Amino acid sequence: MKITKPSLSFWQIFNMNVGFLGIQYSFGLQQTAINPIFLYLGAPEDMLPILNIAGPVTGLIVQPIIGAMSDKTWSARWGRRKPYFLIGAILGSLCLFAFPTSPVLWFAVGLLWILDVGNNMAMEPYRAFVGDKLPEKQLSLGSQMQSRFVGAGILLANGSIVLFQYLFGGESVEVAGTIPTWLYYSFYIGAILSITTILYSVLKTPEIPPSSLELEEINAARAKPLMDRIMFPFKEIAEAIKRMPKFMWRVGAVYLFQWYALFIYWQYTTPLFKLTMGYSTGE
Image (cartoon, rainbow, N blue to C red):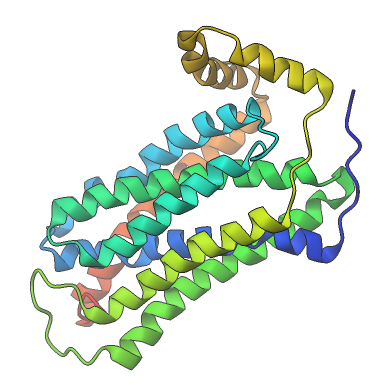
């Protein structure tokens, strides 16, 4: 039996999307501040793409697997999607706290892998969570609200870096192997926002329980042997790829080239300005 979803008020939709602010603040720091940290720790500029390979790899692997797993999850206490994006937010917050204290390059690269797993673990179930809650007539409003928080998170992340450098910078000379103290503040704020905004949405927004048919499917999946449960997400992903309409294949081809360009842009923006305009890594 199909569940009829009640219409939500503006503030209910607002509350359920607040967590995107923290997630996108974390992604914003990753896009803007991670490479300068790698450079501070002595990374060669031609190694930046491979040092950042965690982003596309974890996005490609973690998001679809966690999405498939959360589809077949239900807990009367914790819900369906909430456990995944709450664990992801905790992982991300811990990594953001630790990142600016990285003593050596390999430590920072390892933290980036964990941070990306956490961010992607939070992102995919969170998107599904919004879709689960909203009736069809409110999906566009939910998407608009989500986009606003995404944009605000990126803006705050980049703005905080500029602000804290202006307020607490003062370094005229870069010291190799040393991360400027002003950069710590942006990461600490990101760590706090990542967990608090997710917690706010979790506490303010109850999940809709599954229908009796969905609950039967979830219980049947739990009763399967361990190996079948481990392989289930991969089978789901393969089946979804088989059924994907031609339009989605065309969209995927467009995104393939778009994200190729974006990845190069993110990795080399800082070295580009450093080389052509005489800026330091921090600027």
